[in-house]
Each structure stands twice: as structure tokens, then as C-alpha cells.
Image 1: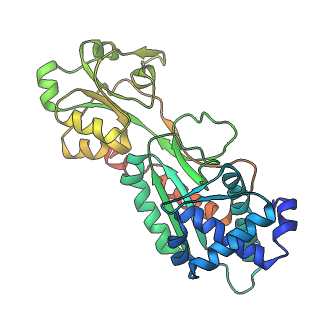
Image 2 (image 1 turned 120 degrees about the vertical axis):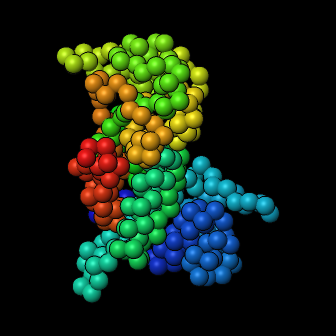
Image 3 (image 1 turned 30 degrees about the vertical axis):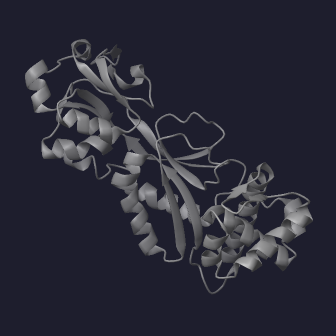
Length: 319
């Protein structure tokens, strides 16, 4: 087990310190003492005492306490990462050596893009929770780029090119894109026959990728062809743009996991189907420098089954 030897020597041989680690991580993850008491089933005074003793032994303040709120200090954030890892390693060691139980248990904190999370990851997560009753999941759905280490995440689902090369990544599947517009829009502006025809159209821009990335296609010979629509609306959320496109406000180029339901219902019509857009990866990524806990690996195994080959959202488009 990749347990930090110094910290392990301080805490792992002392059950009081182990309980203090549990109390501290519970307060950080729950956002306060009251929520931590409900999570651990012990009195607030006991949690407060354990954390105070922990701070005294470390000679460092981990939490800032006021009458209104609790905040984590810089030292507390750094210590939290190590504490979570120690607790995770010990739990995995217990599971690996237990002769009476192989049930995975514990908490998994996950970050994922908003639209993908709502439409597809939520279903996979619910299935996993049903299969594993001892698992607790905290799911943060946000299109901003989460820092896994600083924000204390066990795992993130990311789509597209991975900018941070230090992360441990596992490819789960592919995300394909399609270009669409509503029938109302096409009746008014006409249907583009080539990407260069987009120069005379209105585009809806996803602001988390570049203009070039969104409107670049591959021709019949594999050469890139760049469209240049006039952008009327920008958003960091694909569902907002898809709804705008369905209401005739412009052309959208976006992942099929967002647009599939609009195409099936007839609200959007695919265009430029002779011009391909490069598919990008769907990844499970983990913080660097530590072993992946068994429960996190089990969850990523589950996602691999859900999203590999032809995912559910692409099946209606390929049949």
C-alpha cells in the first residue's frame, strides 16, 4: 500500500489519532460539525475535541472556526489529501485481507461535465449504487475544469483532450459530434452543403472549446476544412445551446450525447453528414501519486461497461 510512512507512523498505530482523522475528514467533506455528527453518529463535542487534539499534535491549525462557518486552512487542505489517502489505503487493506467480506464500501467524490452527468452519468451512478449498497457517492456536475487534488476528488469524468498530463487516465469510450439545425432555421437560411457554407450562417458556440475546434471538419480526403459561421450566442453549457438551436436561433455542432434526443424527436436535423468531425475520448481520470482505491476502480469498471463500444445515445443514430 502506498501509505505515506511518516504519517502512518504518527497515526496508524494510535486508534485515537485514527478516530481524529475520521472526524477531520468528515467535517471537511460535510462542510461543518453538525453534518459530520450525523454522518459519524457521535456528538459534536467529541468531534471538536478530536480535531483540537489532532491540531495540537501537529502544531498546526487545520480549520478556521467562527460562529457562522467553518473553513479549511491551507495546511488543512494539504493535510486532508494525506488523511483521505491513509483512510482509503487502510480500508482497501482491510477489504483485501478480510476473509468474511469482499463488499466494497466507502465514499467516492466524482466530478463530471454538467450535461453528460445529467443525461448519462446519473443513470450509470444509480445502477452502481444499487449494486453496491455500502458505497456513498458525492457527484459534482460542473463544466468548469476541476482540480482533483486541491478540491479533494477521487475521480473525474472528462471528455476531449486531456490538458493535465500528470493525471492518471483511463479511456472509457468515444464522444462523437454532429452538426444540426432546426427545420425553421434551414427553411429561412438554407442547408449548408460544405463546411465553407457555414460562413453564411449563424453559429452557436460552446465557450469551453476554441472556435477552430468547434467548426473544423474533415473532407473526403481527410484534409481539414474550416467553417466560419457568425457566432450569435456563446455558452459554457451544451444543453443551453441545443435548446437555442431547436428554437431556430442558429446551427450547432456538439456531442451526440447532447443532441441525440433532439434528433430523435425531430427538433433538430443533422447537416454536413458527408464531413466528419474527429471523435474525442471519454476518460476516467484520477489524482497522480497514489494507488486508485478499489471502490474507485470498481466504479470506473462499471462506466467502461456503460460507455464503451456504441453507447446508448449513439444507437438510435446508427440504426
